[in-house]
Image 1: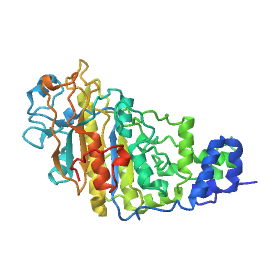
Image 2 (image 1 turned 120 degrees about the vertical axis):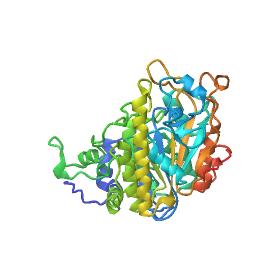
Image 3 (image 1 turned 90 degrees about the vertical axis):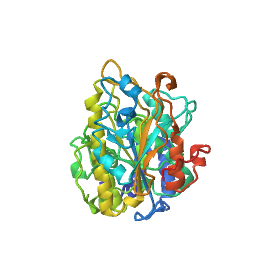
Image 4 (image 1 turned 60 degrees about the vertical axis):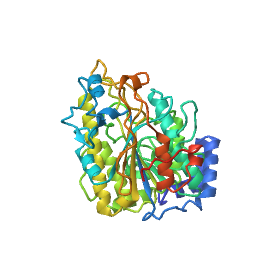
Length: 443
C-alpha cells in the first residue's frame, strides 16, 4: 500500500490505522500503549486554558553553566569584592549603578534601561540550603524544586501542569531547546520541544533519502528526525543542563519526543509562526533567535502558558572576563529586543520573564583568570506588572560570613517560584512545591 502524506497533523497521522499497524512491529508495546492513550484523549486535546489572546505567559530563561552573579550584579562599593577578585572585579567607575552599592555589568546597558523604566526586578542572593556544586545535581534541584537531599522525577512546571492543566493541549508548554527540560517533566507528559518549526513537519515522499522506501515506517522515522541546523550554544561550553534527562538521540529521548510530538499539530505551529512577524530587530545570537520565535508564537496567538529557553556557556573556569561579558551582552540584547517586540504587539502586559542559573561562582577568582562553582546568584524578573527594583538582600562578602568560600543565600529560590505560581499563574503553590513557601513580592 502506498502511503500519501496528506494528513494535516501528526496527531491525525498517528491516529491512523496505517501507522497503528506499522507500530505493532516497529516499537515496544509500552509505546504502542502510549498511543492507545493518546487516541483516547485526543478528542479532548483541543481544550485550552487560554485562548491565545488572553491569560498570562511565563518565559523561563536558563543561564546554563553557573552564571557569575557577582560580576553580573556587581557589588562595586564592597572592598571584599575587589580584594577577592584583583583581576576580574568590575571597577566601580564601570558598573551601571542601580543603587549606591550595586550595579550591572558594563555590557548590560539595555537591562539598565529596563530597570529604570520599571520593567526589571533584580532578586539578590537566590539559592537553597546545603548547596551542591555539581552542575547536574544543582540544575536538577532548581528544575524539580526539591530539597538538596531529595530526588524527584517530576519538574516544578510539570507538577503545575498535573495539578492545574488537566485536559490541556500539549502545546501549553513549548521548550525552544534540543531536549525536554526536566522542569517540564510531569506524570501526564505535556509540552513540546523544538529548535526550529521546520523540524515540525511531515517529510514528503519525494524528499526521502535514496535508501528509504515510501512506507509508513520510513515516513515515521523521517518525521521525527531533527535537522542539524542549529548553531552551537553561546559560549560553546555547557548548553543546557537537565539533571538526569538522557542526551538527545538516546532511545528515551526519541520515545519521549515521539510520544509528545504525536499530540501536537505541526501545521498549527508553523502557521502561527508565520502569522505574526517580528516587529523589531534582534541581535545575532542563538538566544535572540529563540526569543524571536517565542515572540512570533505569542503574537500569532499560540495558546501556550510556559515557554522555556536557554543560553549556555556560563561555566567560566578560565579567562572569564571576555567570555562572561559577551554572554551578558548577548543576554541583554536579546531581552531588550524581546521586550520591544512584545510592546509593539501589545502583549507585554501578559508576559513575565524569569531567569535562573544552577549556581553562582565562588567569591575569589582562581589562578586561571576564571571562577569556580559556587552558590547563590541573582535572578531577574522582567515584565510590565512586576515589582521592579532591587529585591531581597545582597549577601555579605565578608570572609567571616562565607560558607566554605561561598556566599550564603538570602532568598530561597522556591519563594520566587511560589510568587510566580500564586501571583502570576494564579494557582496554589503548595501542591506544586510540596509545602508552603512565602511568595517573594515580585508581582
